[in-house]
Image (cartoon, rainbow, N blue to C red):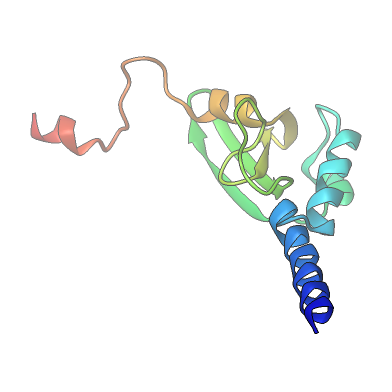
Length: 129
């Protein structure tokens, strides 16, 4: 009887370890990560979609040096210090004028961040003061 309890406890522990050690490993996430290696700067949006498939998140907007389109693909379970992901594991692809201009957090930040001292155009603090 003791052996049966011990075997049952160990089997539950082994099953639980898989979930603790690999909490969000999913095949589509790994697949997206591997497909990133096939991308080259200068590719068109349709070429990138042909390789990567539709993005998990798509955004566009006017920023410092023009109009950008951003595609975000889930490639990691979370952001890591020094990693290329933003927003909990999404790798950004940066497009300008329909061409791939950059991949990763640094390219994304360079596109969207404003120069030193420039606030947002609709900054409520500046409207009051």
